[in-house]
Image 1 (cartoon, rainbow, N blue to C red):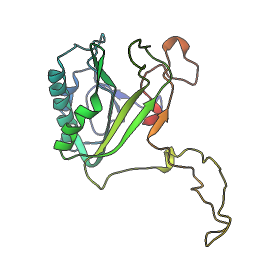
Image 2: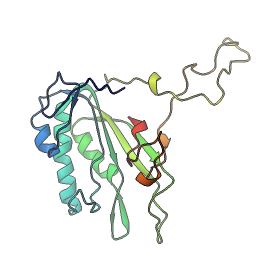
Image 3: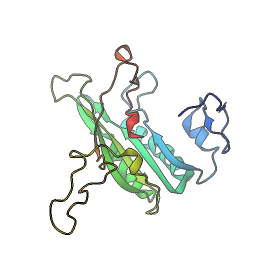
Length: 211
């Protein structure tokens, strides 16, 4: 939970609880020491011409992403994780799934993919010459096999909570984890436009429940 007592720094320091730097990410990353971060979560531009990005040729975009990925990996601790959330690049109606073309960059840097998490949402632009896109992906990589993963805090309710084995050596014991089940790699989380926000919702198009 956020506390008003936490000061927000504008220059990175390990001892600070919160740092907000309005800067070019690549320039900022180059100021960070090796193996500093435990977790990197980002949703970079998809190269589709939004107001916050300059549309590039696909090859130039991939090179740009590779530069940032290399710096993120350098800054990542040996037990750390990177979660890279992307969608599809669209070129004259043809889609290019960005996670598939970014994967080799991570693999060449020695990272191991743990999950390709699908974020499914119900609303978005409607297509007339192909099926409307209703998902994006979060590709999760670790730097080693000895990585931090805390499943219990993100478990979801069991389909049949309290169900027990009826017979056999485990008769009478719970058949599922009493803390809940593993949520899996498919998340159905609706995206919310700013003029439809309720008090319990967030207008950002990024599924913050995945973090």
